[in-house]
Length: 185
Image 1 (cartoon, rainbow, N blue to C red):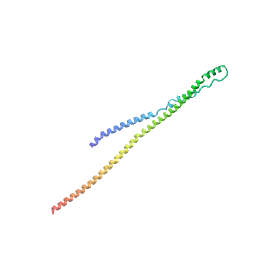
Image 2 (cartoon, one colour):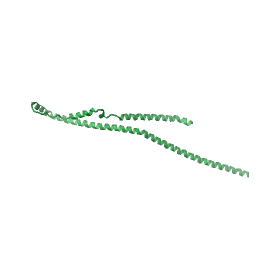
Image 3 (cartoon, one colour):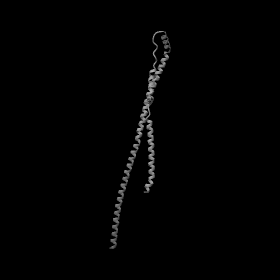
C-alpha cells in the first residue's frame, strides 16, 4: 500500500502535465485554424476587379478627330503633333494594365494556395494528436503484454522451484528415514 501512495503524486503530476500539454495543443490548433480561414484579397475587395475592368477600358488611345471644317482641321493638326506622345502613353498604359492584370492573377493564385496550405496544416495537426495517442496506447499494450509474459515466466520459474523444493524435501525425508532405520539396526 505504501508503494501505491508513493506513486500517486507522481501519477497526478503526469496527468496534470498531460492536461496542460493537451490544452496547449488545442490552443495552437485553434490559432492555426483561425489563421487558415482568411478571406482572399479578391473576396475582401470585390471593387478591385471592377476598377481593373475600368482600367482595362481606359488605357486605349482615343480615336483621332473626324469630320470637316476648320475646327476639325485645327484639332487634327494638334492631334498629329501630339500623336507620338499619345502613342507612347498608350503603350505605357497597355504595359501597365498587363502588369497589373498579371500581378493580380498571380496574387489570387498565391493567396488561394496559401489558404489551401493553411487548411492542410490544420488537417495535419488534427491528425497528429490521435496518431500520437494511438502510438502511446500501442506502446502501453505492448508493455502490458511484455509484463504479462515476464510475470508468466516468473510464475513458471516459481512452480519449477517449488517442485524442486518438494523433491528435495521428499529426498531429505527419505534420507532421514533411512538414517533412522540404520541407527535402529
